[in-house]
Length: 217
Image (tube, rainbow, N blue to C red; front, top):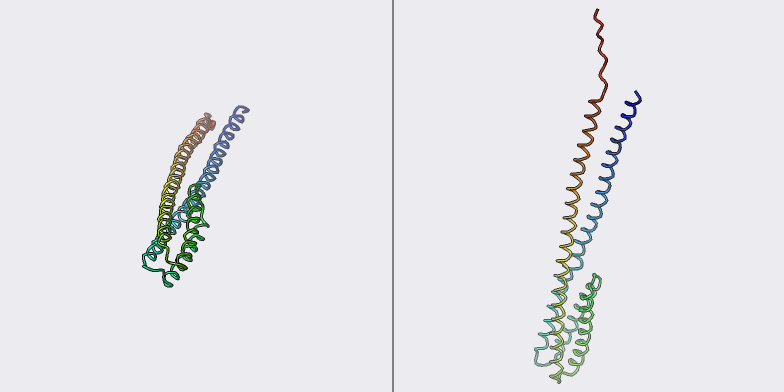
């Protein structure tokens, strides 16, 4: 009787351990999945806010720099051209303010700061030029700096592509890791299920049979 009682306790303990393992496994995978979901959410948000929107800003900045370039093709600096340059500069400043709210990489920071410095020099040169349009050398200097701005914008655009690819690769890595963990979880659950089933079958085979009464009337 004592042996049967001891065996029953062992069986219950094994069953309890199996249930505890299932609970811990589900809890652990739930926490891991939640962390992966947060990582994916942050990654997709960064792709949109810090890369796609910035690429749109860069595209608009390129168009505005091109407009500034075209205004210099007028034979003389006119009041109309000067007013348009001011409007273009205001539009550029608005885009730069939006750009500054995004996250930068180290290379992007360097290019962006260089862009703003070159832009400031161009604005100063434009003010001098529209005040006195007799200097042809100044036109050439402004155009050269505008070309430098376009080169810097191209570099900034390349950064967005590279960072976008990096974020997508990181997201794919998180997804693949999550899939691998899910497969491992399924295998462990199957093993625990088989173990629990073996406990049940063993318990049934060891269950004492009802005594039979051989006394016949």
